[in-house]
Image (tube, rainbow, N blue to C red; front, side, top):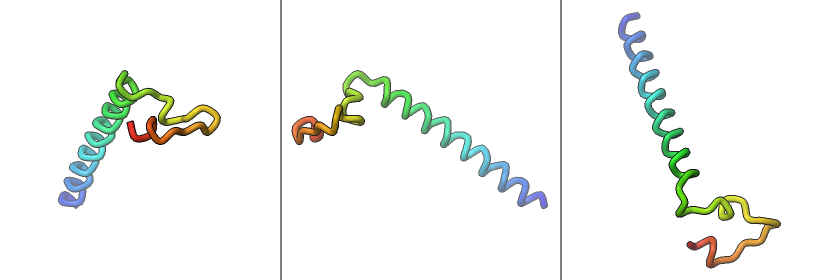
Amino acid sequence: MTQLEAFLYVMGIGLAICAFLGVGILVLYLNSPDKPKVQAVPPKGERRPAEVSA
């Protein structure tokens, strides 16, 4: 049972690190001024190819 406990312990730490990094990257991406939030949710389905590519 010690090997199983060690494996679960390492996997738990790995998942925690991945979740922490994922949330941090998501927060930085949402707070970045370079990418406006209009691209994620276009108003009234109005999408232009120039805005999507940029």
